Length: 331
Ligand code: ADP
Ligand code: TRP
Image 1 (cartoon, rainbow, N blue to C red):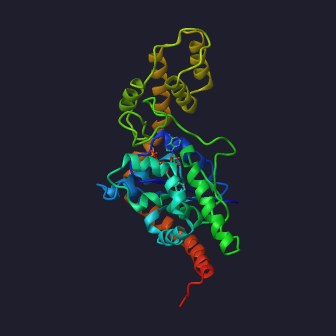
Image 2 (cartoon, protein in one colour; image 1 turned 30 degrees about the vertical axis):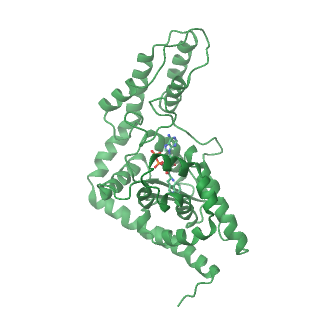
Image 3 (cartoon, rainbow, N blue to C red; image 1 turned 45 degrees about the vertical axis):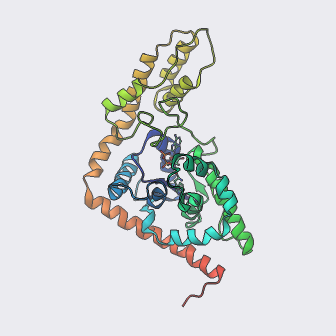
């Protein structure tokens, strides 16, 4: 049995990218491993230092996690800010992270471009907090999407530096995990490459989107003028549509549209209609559960209380060890 940790920032509703990049794998692992899943509300502050409806966002993400299939009876589900050992370990790990490597991190460079009015120190040390999230439970497997690969590499660097300095295998190395396969990158609908909640209107399909909204978004997805010769290579926007189809449609459906692409009879309208219906079929049960779980306040409170307790227990063990290794006095 290994320890698994993953998390998602509470900056918005869950979309298919989050689901297929991170949550689906987590769900597949929860019966075999020691699994921790959390809502990264502290990480959310790096880009949204004073978010409107902060509490509601956290609650919505929690409801959507549970609706998507994360089971609090087998996994530990908690809110990052409910575990004070995480920010303490983050402070300590900051001493083993170099400013140079943090500045070179792609996600930092990306974020300072997007949030040039708020280049705070939290953005720079984002990967350190993420490492603390993971190593506080001594996790080895981290189910995440492709965009998180570099963060995991940095976490391994911090861990190795710490272990080396104290000449002790305190933390195991954590790795991004997708059952031995290439990490997932779900494309968006606007031809921009990645599905993401901050990529702009119409790019992301949310688990909570109603069928009407979902249909509209998919029908507006970017396409091109169509193939002009048989078996032509697909441009990016069309490759993206096929990639989305591979996530939710049957093999027969995919083959049908592959064939029509190859013999130049493809009609993008038909393909998008089919894709939208298959996405609706896929998200329907999740949407139902969102309604059901979202109205059960007692249950949600219980999940959060119990998850927090279990997470703190595991975190306290690690932090005690780290404090003792560093040499802090325990009165
Ligand atoms: P967003 O990018 O929408 O802000 P987060 O950064 O909170 O979402 O991502 C949470 C998790 O979902 C991470 O594991 C991330 O890798 C994964 N994820 C987000 N978008 C995608 C995507 N388009 N494809 C694959 N995984 C994704
Ligand atoms: N950085 C991740 C993201 O934006 C969220 C995250 C924070 C995370 N801490 C984590 C993911 C620990 C996995 C493990 O998507």
